Image (cartoon, rainbow, N blue to C red; front, top):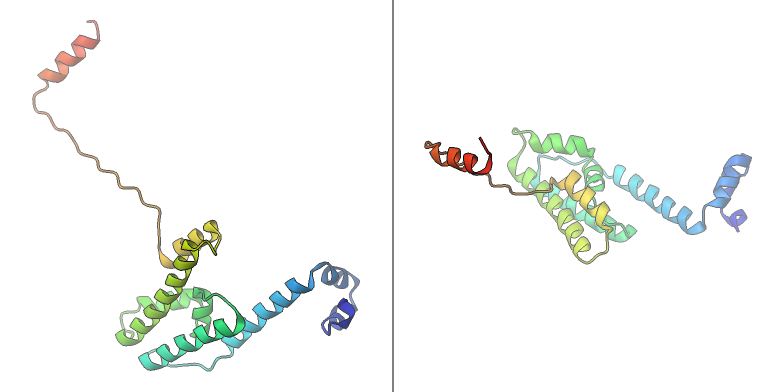
Length: 171
């Protein structure tokens, strides 16, 4: 049971924490620990020169390999973390016109790979639809779109309108 789990020793000193700990299934605790370890591994990756296209390409490859190793789906937040940035800081870097174009192209390739994985998983129904739509809209700038074509009808002769009006309304 929980008593064999080494982390149980940490929480058993606090009765409320121990009660909560025991209420969480071992599978969920293991998944949470895996998520935390994965994030820590990404954060601890050595810093790279984001102006060097080769370093960015290698980091993208390393990130994808880490995702496979930890059984994680690649995502924009994880990719940004692997690059040593937050999602917002990564967006600012991509918007900076002074950045090395080749390096930015490599970052965009990584982002496109993540987008492709998400779209593929949605098409194969391996991602909940609502979650997929949220991610596509917020990370990849997808949007709901309805094309509305409005054509203004301009008539210089009002006689036809007046006749139509008079035929409908008694004057």
